[in-house]
Length: 165
Image 1 (cartoon, rainbow, N blue to C red):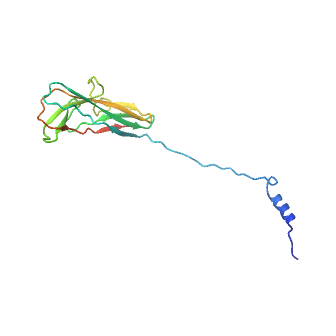
Image 2: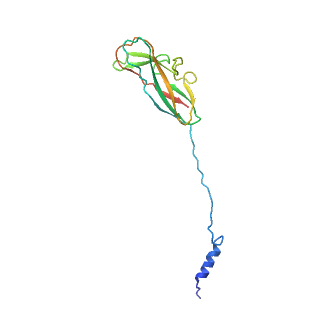
Image 3: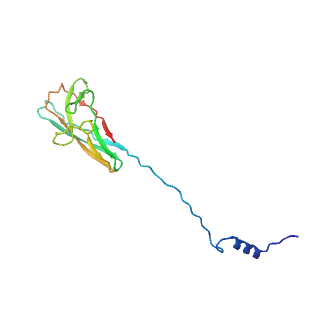
């Protein structure tokens, strides 16, 4: 014996199997989404500190540099300006490009009044701050005191910046 399914019977069977008498069914679930933001700091850049050209040094020379630091919001940090060799915060030295043994003394400061040296010892002569997630700009004040330079030359030094966080 063979069964024959008529379209009307097929429609009734389908309607009986579907929940809600022909309405769409839904199922729900979820996915986990996460992100870990770490404390981080970057030295974004520093502008060159260029003292005015001079011959005989009869007056002190002043110059500035802008230092930009970017740290995660809420991250505490300290900006240090490293010393090279036997330098101290009071006596840094630029070397002659023609005769590297020739030196010109200078110092770096936290403020325009040149009363607080900027160095590398946390808690003593660094700049403490807290990140806000945006670039933060600091002015470094330089001073070349009156002195007798070793000779006509171009004097330079590269100062490493360390941000400790």
